[in-house]
Length: 349
Image 1: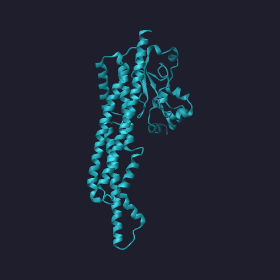
Image 2: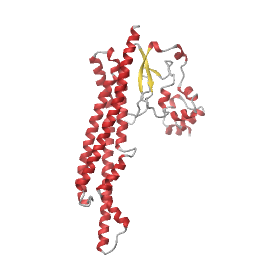
Image 3: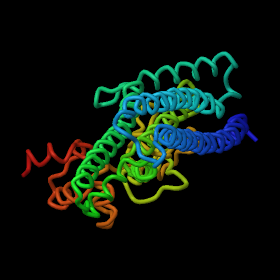
Image 4: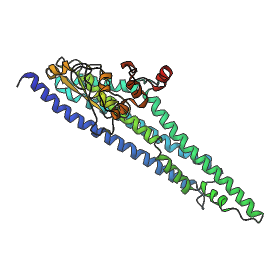
């Protein structure tokens, strides 16, 4: 066995173990995140019960104290969530260095891990937001949604309660609908609203889950990229689909097109389109110089040609309907693949 073959075998084994560790980290981090949100909701329900009267109703005069206690619970969740995210990013970056640790000193691997962690935490997206901004937005939206739901329920319920009391004082029978509205301010009904709200796809937990997955993946993948950048035996990286890739999207193109003549889904160092989108589990693996064949070099193709040869459902899955129609009409260019549809509509109508 040649020296390069032995080196590759060592890296492949370490890479396989690192990938398993990364996927485990993703799973465990999201599980802990879910537990934090469940515990937070349980605490809020206990706070509601504490501030309710003997009939289980939250009275208007208790609303301010109730809100203060609820906001304290949410702030605690915010601290736990931020700490968990930063810890998961650090672990992801460390795991990303493991594949090439046999080729580096401990100090070098640690430096890559720390620099990657810092980069991810300070990374500014196309929307101008950094990680701290995104986590603040999630925490703020969570607090706003919960306090708004509580405010609305208590105010509506107490208004109905006052109206019922007035009707009874006048010797009248309150309508059933009005009596039912009184229960809007009960701890039980408010709890139902908050539980339903937490299951909404745009709820804070699901936003946080997407953020966690995106940033842990970024930390792992970037540390991996940074670990191989100085290795002369590595010609590039192969874009690999997640084991649980759910449906056709732009990742399928990145993982299949032979854009640089290095093989299907292989990109020179620094030119990979990974990560293609948020909330992804796609990853990369090193491709060594002796693995690129003459067939790979001869099979080089641009993305437009590759897309043109795909079935209609694949094109739509990758491009969407509008861009797919532009491709069909022969006007979609390479530079337009990642363009916003809104911008293209201004140009083409």
